Image (cartoon, rainbow, N blue to C red; front, side):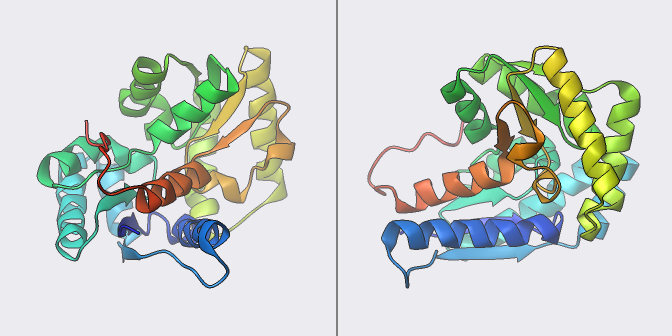
Length: 240
């Protein structure tokens, strides 16, 4: 088993699910008393959120790179950013560390391909939905057509994520709003829905959509287990 390094706390609500999902999967694969070997560094999301709001992605990247280096020095053999949005600075982390960063968009794109979906609807923070760092990876590496909501919907989804889900609040009216957005995606041709924020899985379930839902939190956690339990002598081209 290889050591997993989690960069969490963004928010801790979803990071707790990473820990649970990784350990449940290891237990299921290896036996009832087995658990994952992992290191978790949980950052103060308040600091990260202020940098996001200020547009200071360079400082956010430096902060997370320092965390990544500490995990690597402590023995982590792969790294996971337990957040979709902060993959905006993934390349900075990759360039300053010597272990693979398992990018959250990769298991998500692969899952869409396995479903045979060519058009997907993307839900996430305003940064993830509007900027190229996430969508372009899905488009260029996995051949997906990525739909995003209209402008007013993006703002409301962003608000729900930060004001409710990141604070552990799950509100029925917000679930209804996401369901309506999903229906509009399907009307536009979406064959699958990407929950492109690790907190959305707290609110949206498979039953909320008429097409498959791709939960990035679960897919990322499973990718970590696959890496940890794979042959360490095998070639892993995760760092590209």
